Length: 177
Ligand SMILES: Cc1cc2nc3c(=O)[nH]c(=O)nc-3n(C[C@H](O)[C@H](O)[C@H](O)COP(=O)(O)O)c2cc1C
Image 1 (cartoon, rainbow, N blue to C red):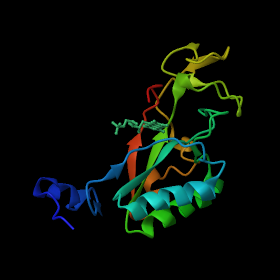
Image 2: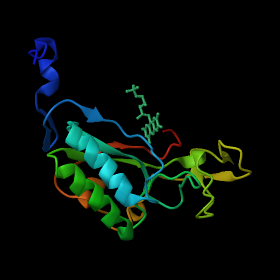
Image 3: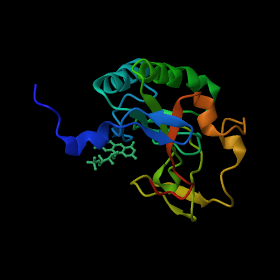
């Protein structure tokens, strides 16, 4: 087999990300896939295959962290309360099996979300209609997301996923993705 081109050597070097170290620079950015909270086992295996294939960091898709911002009927990840943790733990275990790090993209979609499942009035940066076709009005958010949104625990989010887990992005409550 031909020797790898030395120009690409840097891609295979470990890189520290805060308290954890990725074994190389291949970072699977968040992408939706339709499995999410609906098919957690399929989802866990799909991310595990990516880790097996060599990605050092494997992320979820966007994961809703409060029912006041949900994208039904689209299937994303959910971590509304502790009942959602086992599904995420399954994914993290599959990723860790292959010595990769698991990342979670926490998202609060603001006025992007019509909340067709929870039926909560959405909260966004301004009192305005949601961005889709639904006839739904978003409330203006008065202050930053409170710790009660973290399932009432007030714990920082990465801590809920355990060691070896990174938080790839935490979308602020501005309605942007
Ligand atoms: C089907 C699909 C789903 C995606 N879902 C997400 C997502 O959940 N969160 C996110 O931040 N980006 C999402 N993206 C954007 C990707 O993470 C990525 O930024 C985009 O595909 C561009 O990547 P590239 O520059 O490597 O081509 C999605 C993209 C695709 C094609």
